[in-house]
Length: 238
Image: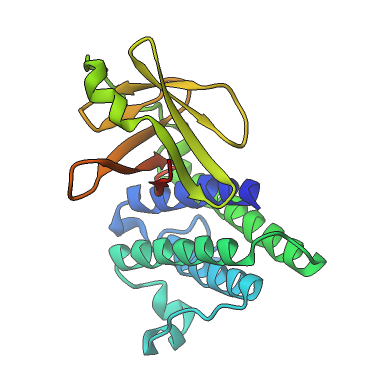
């Protein structure tokens, strides 16, 4: 299940980033009259996410009267509305995958595959539209340059510990030779966390950032992983 969550983070986050980067004036664009507009694709992906993920975990989506409007009407909603609703549908799917737990039926596997494939196919579709508009899709952009600062070991040591993203998936933060490193329980070697501010860190091997959070007493309480255009919080458990 965790592999599916990572896949959804990737393509779901890139879809949100793509829609967010396209100017609102281009949301009625389609390469040919027979194809869907950008706005139509945005509302279609939202609806598909709720439909597939709701069946996966037997969850009901939050609905309002606007949800029963025709797709052609929703396709012309303001850009900000469409992007916000798409993000909400992905959060709904996050909850559904956590609730579903371990896959135990062919139906569950089929629904997950349909969800992931739909995200990938529509990201490919939107990327093609962006290229035709003279834009570069999110996955074609280089990471933003980042500059590391020096922090004393006393500022780093409070962040050492284990952080749980979801049950079965933890990040272990350690300190070696005055520097922080992070390793995933899913595998891989520890990677260095380079400080950008006192609480914000980045990795050089992948385009990902980590922000450490503190509780009311000032103690390190969690972290947020920023990757694929999405923010995933983790609670410090030890």
